[in-house]
Length: 219
Image (cartoon, rainbow, N blue to C red):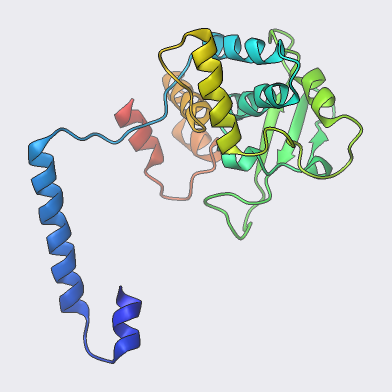
């Protein structure tokens, strides 16, 4: 709106902008007086519960569901944004020296568009995990050496579709969303008492972000 005012002529537009801001606040207050509104947040899930869905997907012969299981697991175990996971490229990925973790460099992220700092997801392969994620990764990768890792479950929208279908097939009353993995990881980290600075680094929040406070408040 400011650009539109400025492109028209050189008159001062501050007063018009203030008028619009005041009008918006009045409308918001009027709406708040008629009904309760609270910001929605993605559903959180216990790991054992979400694993029920992963096992359900892995029993299917469809590639898209096997990809959905790994896609979802990465978001839950690394706290990644779903849109970031969809853009992982095979040629960027490599194993940690002992082979117990997959390092996943991120090409672009919400708070680091220009890649001022390197960002990586670390998917650890734990022997006590009921799902062999390393084997699942190799099955999905196949003999490919480049390109996006996920070809069938190619983006957040596809993942959310299969979240909905899977939840319906299992008779769940709650449905995961693309942000459920990240929300679960963040709240588990807070509940476990992990220092705030470590959480800010792991979840790659911008410096001075109030996300830690917001997640703790809402949950």
